[in-house]
Length: 474
Ligand code: SAH
Ligand code: SF4
Ligand code: F3S
Figure 1: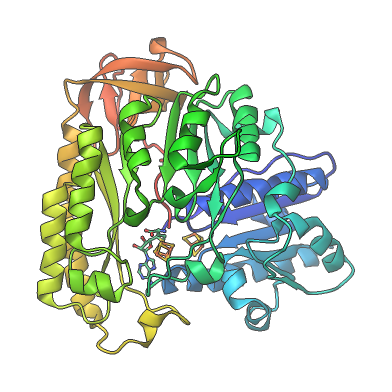
Figure 2: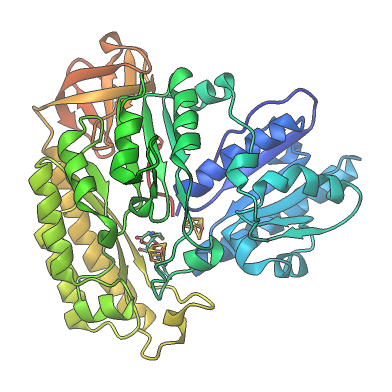
């Protein structure tokens, strides 16, 4: 879990907003949209919390640690707010996102510094809610709004998009109907809803026209996206990707996060047929034990996952996989855990995220008996992560001496360097002469550093620190 301070867009008068984002990419997207809505309302972004007239904390409820972090953050905000008040200034404080949805008014009871609690479905009503706060009300808005929030959020303008760079997130689906027994998302984000194709294509066209080259389609269950083509025929994610690939300027497409049960034949074929679709897929499995998969309500067996991976690799042999794992789900025995290690060895992951099971209020998992002791969870997590680290390192070092395409994103740390990403999301430092931001260049990898690849001709004094834009932050 990493905190990221995300940019918001600029407005005209002097009110300033600071937005801090926790959680998954969907929260990053939502923070940007809230920034857009507030820019229209006259707010300018700031990355200094103490100069903000409005502070928004966009929160994540996925694990206890993530949710609890919010309260220590609110403690710090309380101090800054009193300091501002001592200087005769004000500070409005809002909590948005999944903790807002899950805890609602309780947040204000526990942290009275909070003026405003807004769930993920009602961001478009933020300006209206703030007006009420200015009149002295405390506001809690955690409805599942009947109107589609996407229809009511302002469009990003060209300047705003350009400021965010050549890669962009685009939420195409929200919510989840899968009800894995460990997970809060179906409760915090509600039922699965697909955005229609038309507005998605319009947003993608706007992004492309402003210089975006790479789109990552977002959804808690993005491969369950469904819609209609221009003629009204039903299509799935593969059909949407095909339409997006034909937008001039869009060179790269990605999507995240996928559920193994929703990888249909058309989507697998798209990995073979669509050159713009990058050969990198986040396909969480959580566990390699059938018994635990069943208890988690994942509704597939380990073998189904392995067979699926074979089929996708059959369509796209150079495909790299990333995954999510939970260790210590209630009832997980040493043998179950070893099944997870065996699955990891069999698949070979380029990247992975692994977590100790965290019981979440209201989920069926939390009510199960036979919780795994904390020290056993820690020990298993260490063993799993050691294996995953080995695989990640092997993947990264395998590029030395090979050619790869790089989408250039920004200048490097040292003069004469630019930094971009390979199709597999690895940061690559290239010689500045190779190209400009937004170009896709082919380079030969000279060596692999701990966090990045160095192309031939991009000599550096030290390993540059790169803020991984697509690092998973949930
Ligand atoms: N929709 C995605 C997951 C979203 S949550 C999917 O189906 O895979 C992101 C990750 O957080 C999950 O994949 C899981 O590994 C982890 N996670 C979710 N709930 C958790 C919990 N209660 N304890 C520990 N990890 C959890
Ligand atoms: Fe949570 Fe993903 Fe399962 Fe949905 S599919 S309940 S988001 S883990
Ligand atoms: Fe967290 Fe909500 Fe995303 S719980 S992982 S911010 S959907």
